[in-house]
Length: 358
Ligand SMILES: [Fe+2]
Ligand SMILES: [Fe+2]
Image (cartoon, rainbow, N blue to C red; front, side, top):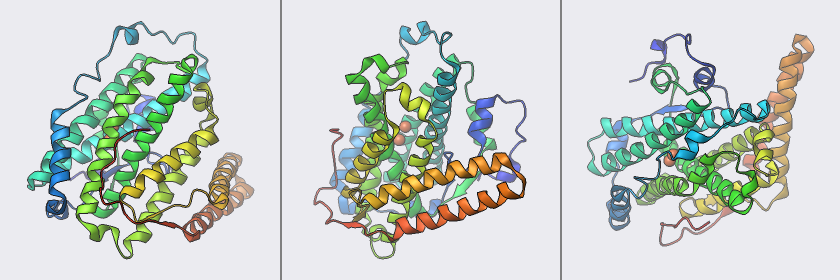
């Protein structure tokens, strides 16, 4: 399908499109998978829940939500601190890339499979993510830095993931997306003085879409329990830790954005990780013991290593190379230590479905 070698050279695009095209370790990626295997998925074990969920998607509760109001047009950022402008644009670029990555993966699944259940679901999810991406990009446009999404489709590299890895990774990114959006929304509900842009008012209904997308993957996995058994439990822990560690490290490098929202970045990440881990018990028989202080200490160690790597790369020379390599090795070991921490094992609830009540 998408052949990375056919990607056009990155020229004549703006800075945010270039940033969105980069495949650094921590940036949102684009995925492709084995569509034939997705075609063979069977949801009949949970037919009732599945049909109910697809009917909810079909009703499209957020159809009229993503409309710009005059307050967007009237919004003026000219007096902003340039640091905040930069941080906000970075946040929007990484969000639009993540939303758009979902949009094209889901659209591709719909196009490539014949299984009606899967086609319907992925068509609806792609519709939602396209809407989300468009809405964010419109705001980027207000800052004169819209991302060229059609360019991105061609220029970005696609990472191949086996279907089960797609389920784990996508389930988690939907649920953590929900947790992030709702945590920001609740904070600004309490402290409207930190609402520095109108887009945050849209987050409540928005995150319900993400929650619903996560529900779809939860039902899909619970209807196909082999995805949750045996050695797959090790993969599940791997993905939980990878998603949590990536978010922790990225957010801790973006404190300007979180401070502007009135958050302590540590508090924010702890809340979001705890909530996502709690929600994940609907589908994952194994989760992270977030009450273990060593878990948080190891995340902090990875964050500090990232600081060392950045400083070492900037310093250059042999000394910089050595320090950077040591810190990278230490991050690999730290992740291994995270994998070796005792996990939580819970019995899966009889009813897989959850409501977004947070
Ligand atoms: Fe989305
Ligand atoms: Fe989503």
